[in-house]
Each structure stands twice: as C-alpha cells, then as structure tokens.
Length: 479
Image (tube, rainbow, N blue to C red; front, top):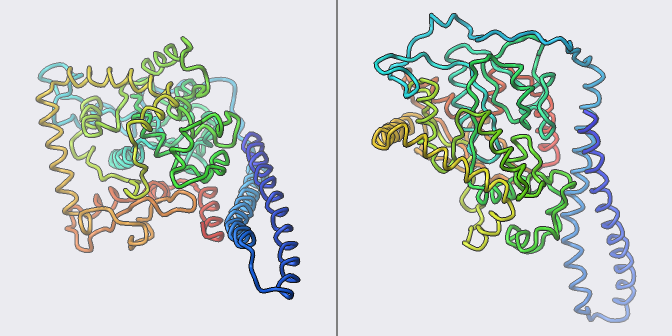
C-alpha cells in the first residue's frame, strides 16, 4: 500500500508540475486577449503571430483537461485504497510455514478421469491423468488473456480452487507478488491454479501450490511486444507525453534515452517488460553475466514457455504436457487491437526496438530454441496434424458462437457483458457479439469462450472493488 501511495504521489507531482506550466500559459493567454482587445479598437488587422498563438493555446485545452482528470482519478483511487486499508485489518501471516499437501484437487487423484490420448510424458500404451495444479505467469501483451480464458474454463469444469487477487484483477502489479495479496488467504491454504497478472516471485508463489504444480508462461517477440505496450499503456506513462509528431513510437526509438527515465512512473512498460514481469531488473546491463544466469533460473522454474508467434503449436504442447483434451484448449482470440492502431514496424524500427529491449531479446532467443526442441520431441508430423485439427475445431466454434464470425469494434458490441477493458482514452480493443440462436449443447461454452477477463472474474466470485472503482472514475471523466 505504501509503495502504491508513494508512486501515486510521485505521479500527482508530475501532473501538478504540468498544470502549473499550463496555468502560466493560461495567464499569458488572458493577458494576450486583454492587449489584443484594446488593439482591435484601434485596428481590425489580425497579426499572423496572434493566429499562431491562439492555435497553440487551443491545443493546451486538451492537456489541461487530461491533467486535471488524471489528478482527480489518482487522488480518488488513492483515497479509496487508504480507506480500505483502515477498514480491513491487515492479514496476520504466521511465520511458521504450514506444509502444502502434495495435491489439493477437489476430488481424489484415483477418481480423476484419464485423458483420451496418450501424452508424450506418459509411458507408451498408458493413458495419462489430467494435471490440475497449474501456475500460469501472465505476462503483458502476449495473448495471455486468451490463455487465461482457457484456464478459467478448465478450472470451472473440474471444480478447482483458484488463488485470486483481492480487490482488483491483478496481484497489486507492479509490486512483487506476496501471498497476503490472495483473496481470503490463510497460511497452509492450498490452491490448484494461480494465473492473474503479477510481478513474479517464485518463492512466494511456490508456497501456495502443491509440489506437482506445472509452471507455465508465454513470451512474444520483444520488438512487437514493445510496439503493443507503447500504444496500450502510453497514456499512463508520463515519460511519453512530451513526444511530438504522429508517429510517437518512431520518435521515441530515434533517441530513447532522451525520453526514458528508469525511475519514471510506469517506466517499466517501456523497456524489457518480459524480464520485469518475470521478477528481474529490466534496467540492468544487457551484457551482464547475470542476465544469462537469470534466464537459466527461468528455465528451471517453468515447465513450458509458450510463444505468441506459434500460439497453436504452444497450445498443442500445453495439451500434451497437462494431458488435457482438445476441447480444453479451444479458444477465440481475446483483447485483439484494431489494425488501424498498430504501428507499421519497418525493418529499421524493428532493429531499434529489439536493441532497446535487448534483455527481452536474449530471453526470447533462448526460449525460441527450447521451444523448437520440444516440438521436435513431440514430432513434426504429429504437430502439424494436431495444429490442423485445433484450427478446424476453432473455426467450427466460430461458426457456432460468433455473430458474423469475426470480432467487431467496441462501439458495435451489443452486450455490456462482452465489452473488453479498454486502454485509457481509447476504444482500440475489439470484442465479439454472441449469436442469438445457439444450440443448447454449445450455448454455455460459447458464452464462456467469449467472456472478457473482468466479467469472467466477476462470474467466478472475485472481489474487484478497486478495478470497478477505477472503471467508474473513467466513466465519470469520459476516458
């Protein structure tokens, strides 16, 4: 809480500084109008300089409105967090560790239904039992919301116990994960699945989950991840506000250190975001031997590191590792952006973005190699066959569930329960309309596959009062 309030105060000071500058401009504007009004009495000619200054001052109106709104929103949110900290007593976690059972499934292991197909990880000729204990490290801008939907559906299907955040849809990111952030947590409690956004802390996560837990995460080509993060989070990163021109991404990459400050509010979204999410220092020297050491640590902690660029192949490997059924990994692409909001990544910009995110590039390069080793072990022909089958089933579900068979702009979404969370001040994330007539067999599955993250968390009984408060503030300020 203290860290959040410190960051909020730092953010408010930045905005207040901007407001003071703008008030000075406003005073000059009033003086200018006073002088020019007297001059108009003497002559009707309007100097070109006056026209330019007037145009410039009009542009300031947008900034004044945004700054005032940001200050109000931050103050309101900080006040509610402070109030909450007084109303709810702090969690008293005993220093004595209570052992977690080997497995905490909701029904005995011997009663679990074997998977239909053999897994690569099972003895030949024997069926395998579906894995129920899963830790998914949800990274940013990597199609992780789509994977989250898969895990939510699987957990509901098998009546599994989720470790959910308390009050919001993430574990107080960008702070490191702590067990006390879990809703209704008590020492010794056992969970099957943890999958919401966090800044990874292996030892803390490990103490929540059984020994047989499978650890998963997903990566993305750092240049394209940077482009996506830059546009999605840009309005909550003060470091980007002074960027000029239509192509702010290109301007930033022209001279990143002219704009970037490692200690700036939300600066972590601008460099090596994957490394930061996974719990490491995203500003360290990319050539330090510690980078390779930390990458090895990540490899030791995670059983499977998926790749966005090979999403279907990743899901096939996931299905095999967890001994799931094909139905368990069916998906619709959630939280996709409109094409018009995606910057054109030229070869030069790609190289600049990759170099700027060099630690993430090393991370991605390492796990790209391990990924294809796993595909080779799975079998090239078998992989091609299973990917084709997954694609066919996904297309079949599209024709059954989605009105028009494709995503639509936010303004065209008919149900509020299907509205995805939008970035600040934009409506760039696409969503879906559910078909009006769906056969009874698929009706429930269709709705769950299309339900956005916030709404699904609410359906699962998660307390999202902070997230909802922020949503109301945004509606009030028309963000």
